Structure formats: C-alpha cells, structure tokens
Length: 310
Image (cartoon, rainbow, N blue to C red; front, side):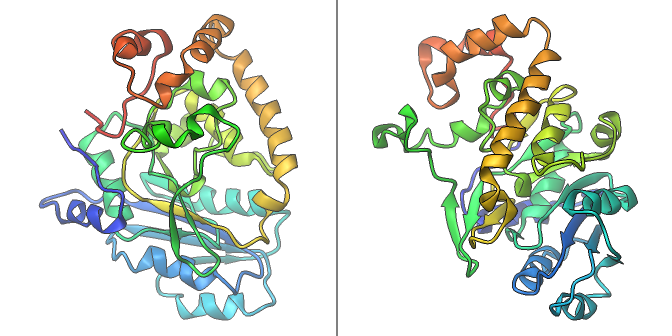
C-alpha cells in the first residue's frame, strides 16, 4: 500500500527515489500567446524536476511580446509548435495530438508544477496500474509565484464552519465520484493537478472541445463516464491568480457552460435521478468522516478511493 501523505511539496521528493522504477513517458502540453510575464517560471517548474522521460510540448499562437525569445532559451528541453491558432483549446488539441506519452496532462502558461510532482505522478500510475486518472491536492499561487496552500472554501457553504476545517479538510478533494460531479460539485477539480493515461484519452475521443472556455470540465465529464478519479494528497500543480486570466475574467461564462455540460452528463448516467437524489442527501459524507455512514455510503454512491489509495 502506498500512502501519499504530505501537504508540502518537499514531502513527495522521496517518491522519486524508487529503485528499479520504470519511467513512463509523460507528455505535458503548454499553450501560450504573449505570455512573457510567466512562461519562464512555468517552463522551469516542469524541466527543473529532471524527469528522464519527459515530453514537453509548447504551442505558441504567434507571440510578439518576447515569449518566443524565452522559448528559444529552452529549445533543447521543449518541442515547440509556433503557428496561428483559433484559440487556446485549438492550440491544446494541436499539442495533445502530437503527444506520445503514456501519461498526459497540460499546464497553462501562467501556472506551475510543484517540485517532485512528476515523480509522484509516475509512482502512482506504476503502483496502481488500474488507475486511469488522478488529481493532486489543489493549490493556488500568487502573482509573484508564492504558494497559497489549498483552494479556499466558498463562504456560502455549510462546510465553511471553522470547526470542521482541520484534519478532515482533505476529504473535500479526496472523495470524488461521477455522482458527486453530477450534483454540480465540480469546482475543486483543478486542471493543473490532473494527469491521465493515454488509454483513457483515446477511449474518450482524444480531444478537447473548441467552442467555449469550459473545455476542461467537459473533458472530465467524458473521463467520469469511463473511469474513477483518484485524488492523491500531494501537491502536483497550482493555479496562479494574477487578475488577467480567462478563467477568472470569464467566470460567469464558465459557470454557464459548465451547467450545460453537467446537464448533458447527467442524461448519460444510469438511473441518474435516484442516485443523484441519494447523493444530495448524503453530501456531507464527502467532506467529513461520519462513522454511522462510513459503511453504507460507498455502496450507495460509488465513492472513489481517497488519498490513501489502498
């Protein structure tokens, strides 16, 4: 049994020391356009990990702000595609279609990976070959690159109560299932921390949709129909907040699109009304250890394994 505990990035470093480990090729795609302010930090967060089987693809849409000069500095470490595109999703499809790795993921040009994270991802997939996609503990970075621990809790939710935010805090991120996702509880699946196997990518069509901005969430709906999401209690990637990003400036559009994707997702679930109704009643179990429910809830809602990954 592998226990991936440690809520600081240094604690995952030991995972990278596994002897006689097979290192699968990991493909990471970054798309950028005029990203000179943050792209170098993004690149260094990936290549400085020294992972021997890394395929790092960067797709630039025709930057004119100095981004291309920065990319040239790292030409020996990256595969660069530089050509016009119709938007970030189109650029992402270009990169992912060229990826050859057994494990895949993408990292936005203003975000970063945590030290040791690629080694942690590798160890999980090597140790648990049946797992098809994983997520790390969600984190934020400030505009200057400082890590701000976990994502904050919405103030209008009952689990905001400080009395409940302590050792059980990780449960919000650890107990994922397609039924929970169908209850519109999707805000904490952090794209920067998600990696998946190629077989799942191929099985779900091998693309991200190019209309709209909630293309990550739409991809998760397809993933959930084929495989369980496992959360590891380690830091993998983080979202940088700097006030000039589509996901924040276009938040209302993202929410509107997400609701439509979830609506279509629900229609594809078997006996969806009953299961979602049960899940809404027992929602608290996702966030706290409730002994009286512990033995029966997974049988009703098909909760995925938590960060212990037993």
